[in-house]
Length: 508
Image 1 (cartoon, rainbow, N blue to C red):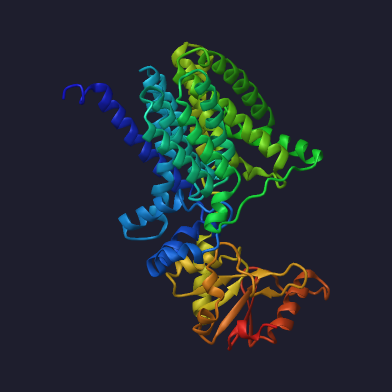
Image 2: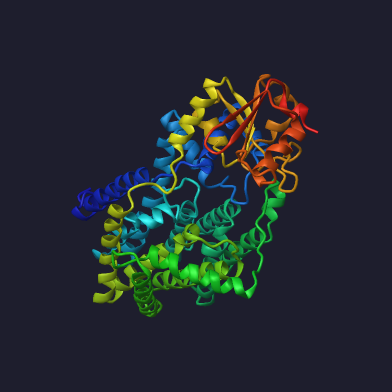
């Protein structure tokens, strides 16, 4: 009993709780409000009404989140009795803080030294850039998926001593379902863990049947078998032209320089210097860890494979690089801190310790430079809801990015807007195609016929003085498709055509 309440255990518990509290505060500060955030609340409401059939009704993106983020969010909806921001902030913060806590626990297993608490600090106090542009504070982000990869890594880590079949089955199934929920997991955790297990199996540290089990689940996931089983969309991997590779490499340099900044000030020079320092540190850390225990080798190999895989796959396959491409590199931050901390525990080196101190210090400074979330559409959505209610508009169709799902969420179902596709060629509404991140049932005759007679279409265009402008063509196309509206309203760079009849029945 005295050992259970030892000073070290009490300190660890206090630091873990502090990490959770800090993560909640940081997530609250940088939590974005934009259309994607409404997914969990809308699917949760559908689940309460339809049961599990809602997962056939909802049309997800290739990152469907069904087996990762949704169950956790649903749990906190249930525990808090609401589906607003609070449960989403709690679940998102836990993905961040528990990843840091698990990393600290693995390091403590390798050697009980204070360096592990530096890792906890660094992985909890992520830079504002990572929380904002890296989407770590977003409830649907690859950083959330990363948590499940961290759990899988920890299970492999602990099973090197236990060699238990049930643990191997657990991390195999966890990896399988995480990759089905988010294909990003394949390159960042699934393949790196598989390659690490192959190496360790060759060294007689992992049972062959454990490796075979993991390999089978990997092949099933890699070949998109689950997507065919469950009727889910899959993500095609397309190799980009060589000219795009160079552009992507430049973006990798920039976003990783910002994400791993050690020098407080953010500019091209500090980004480059930070990356050069980290490159030296990680090469040294790898050479130290790969010569240590088998658990240390696991971390070293998985770190190397994960960092290399996501950078390489981004460079050769991505076609729309920008600042928020930082969202793809959360695993790089995690493994950089984990591997550096591990090496510092094995072989004390001042440069490693300095990096582990500078990184969270620079992150803390970044909070004073970036104080707002990347996107906050709540004021606009609240104003939009008031505008619609003022004009007695409770049912309509809209472009997805015009706060359609946010209005559905914030209005508690009092206003319903179905996000629809606008044909890029003729600008007509495609009532025959279900847009992703909506319910298929919203375009069924039963749902349409039950709608109120007064309806609207929100079009992302406002008439101007140029007869052949794209905006005027868009508006004219909807009039051609649906007829002359009974009213025309303007709200924040969008035009609302109001009809006192069922819009979907007018379409031709």
